[in-house]
Length: 235
Image (cartoon, rainbow, N blue to C red):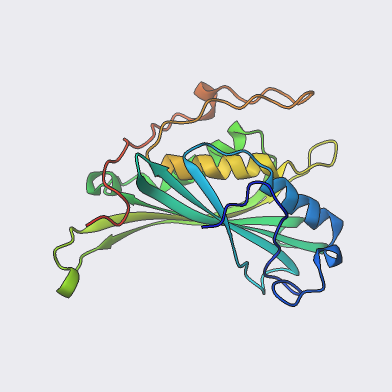
C-alpha cells in the first residue's frame, strides 16, 4: 500500500480525474488545498494511510484514501474515506464539501451480540468529531453487523462477525473560513481505532486561538470495546 504522508498529492476519481487528466492545476484551488491538508495530517502510529481511486459520479471532484489499523502485527480494522467537492454547492450537503467513510472491523461474537452495538458504534464517530473540535452538519449513516459461517474448502475457518460503519457528514468552516480537514481525518482515524478495540488517543491540543476541546470525560460515556487478539480475517 502506497503511503500518502508527504510528497506530491495524487488526484483520482471525479470528472477530469485519473490518468489522462489535464493536470492538477485544472482542479479548483479549494479542492487542491483540501487534499494537501489531508495528505499532511499526522495520524496515530497504529494507522497506515494509502490512496485509492475515488468514485467518479458522486461529485465533480473527489479524492479517496484508505486506512489500516495494525497492532502487534495484526490488522484489526480498515476503511476508506472519500472527500467530495462541488464548487456550486450541494443542497443535500448544505455545503461545498462532503466526507464519506466506510469502516470495517472483525468482532468477537460476544461483543457483536450486544443489542446496543449499533448505537455505540455511531456514537464513536460523533464523539470523535466532537473530541477533535470538528464542525459538521447533516450527518448520516448506517451501522451493520454481519455473521459469516465458512464452508467447503474453507470450512475449517472459525465463524466470524464484522461491524461495518458507513457514514457521511459535511465539514463546517471555522470562523476564519478553514475546514480543518486534518482534524476530521484524525477523528475518523479515532473511529477506526475504537472499532479495533484500541485505547482512546490522548486528547489533542487545540490550535492557537481555538477553544479548548471537550474533556474526555465529557465527550463520551461509552466504554471502548476490549482489545481483541484475533487478527482480522484470521483462520
